[in-house]
Length: 157
Image (tube, rainbow, N blue to C red):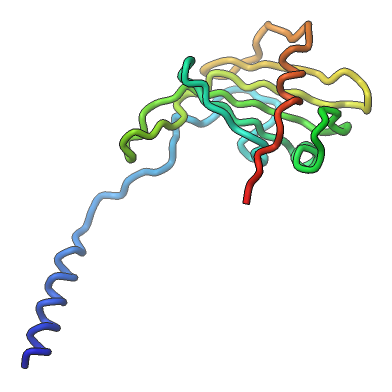
């Protein structure tokens, strides 16, 4: 009899926790890349990421398959022809689901570095937004290209 009463009590407690709750959206739609971009870097693989607390931004360096393979096996900045890097920079905002966490907000910029031929100067394009559109600024002195190609691939398990 005690076993039956214990089973009944446990069943009531278990069912009491099974209330219907509204679905919580976990997709961060604010971080989507809106605009006319030559590539979709969010479909590529991550090479590395960083946070700039002073500016309140976070950035992720993506690469196409050729660039990622090179970045993970080489430390130099001489990417092979056909590879493309993209640095996406977002403003940060508080995560509504996790106290103290920061997540991407609207995209501030996307920078592309394309390697067309071995030894040739890579091309650089910058898009700013929202919505993201090609910026008039160029990388005449090569400082942005040098910065992007010097980023080491993060070690991932």
